[in-house]
Image 1: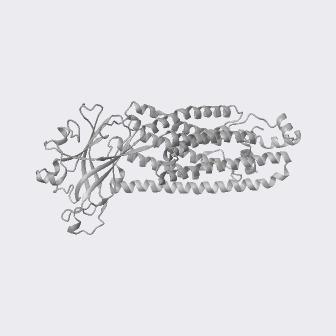
Image 2 (image 1 turned 180 degrees about the vertical axis):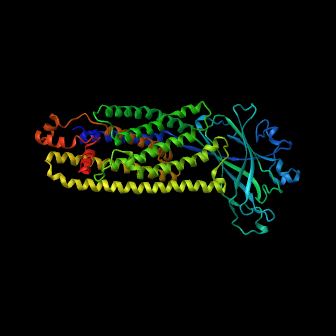
Image 3 (image 1 turned 60 degrees about the vertical axis):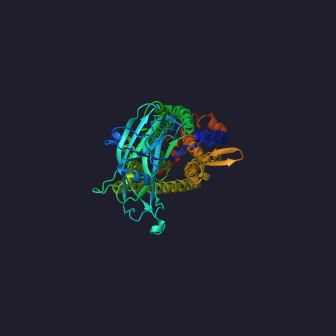
Length: 541
């Protein structure tokens, strides 16, 4: 009566396997905490106010804030008024990175947020629902003496959300508004060494463009990119884990196909979970070092979405296939009520991601949150996905409660069995409950480490040792789910042990007549584990 490996493995061997997995889990956290640097770096940039008096403006040349070909600069707008320089001739120039530095493909992405320094003036206050309109051009080059190549040129509108905490009186003129930071730009690859931003604030009083936005003194940017050292550690983990999960997946499915029966739903779902884990592990990011693939961020989101949707589906089906009062099993159609919210929520998040990062493939300055319609649409997708997630967890908690309740009820029939058979089934039930608790622990660790990474400063220090908490979160949780999938495919693979042979009659001390009676009662019920067979028999009765 062959079951899954988890049922036929001795407690000692199961503890050894658990200990080995715990060692690898610890290594995954230590790799991120002690070897890798922080996941990202934030760099502040202060724009330089350049003067461009050419009629065609940006079509004639690019304005550099420093270097041998730097632009004609002004210190502030008072100097511009003195020199009779018009607002349309002022360009805010930002060079990325800072002087004497280079960008690298190992940085993977660039995210920029914008901060406007706006002074209060009685005759030029920020009106309600004010919108600043920027004419932004982005260029790149790979040599300090090469010509700039245009990468993007867009009109970028952003709504101002500013407050002035002091009384609006003449003595408070010159004080700055407190303004929210604005999303500015996101690029999914860093394929070039140098980037240049030229930002204009064109004024047109007839069309009400950049009127009533206060007196803008400076434009500051904060650039965020992934650390090259973290990228190398991340790529190394993916390269190591990909063959590990792929090999165990092939081994698992080979064992399934060696069975005389066709695969059941639970076995197919575990295999599909292994495929989704392999899909997210494949280190295609290596190609981003040599190719300008700006779609890698979107592709990464899709891969994560596929895995988590498969993981949530597995939990539902895993519980459902071990319920004793469910007659319709081994068919995905029987779980449409539980899997439906997963599909709807995943689709909503996919559409939201396509509306954000999908559009950014052609316009890096686009953000769905910058318009009222876009904000309402984004919130609608997120709310629907949140409702679906809540419904899913209600279904899941209800099913987990039913499984534990039914298994506990089944334990009342165990005393009627022989002592050895009773101990055998008690062990199976214990291991099933143990796996459920391990699943809950993995989910809880994900939430806990996410919260810790958000509320801490990013690193802890013990003596002379610095632990990067955020890096440990990424590598540890990523390694944890890989180990979880690995353990599922290993422990739920069919075992080659047969309790109808001498091992069963000798080691378990069961008489042949009793063993034959138990075996013929449940072996005709195809399933991956003996708990599955036991519960299915109960449901049919």
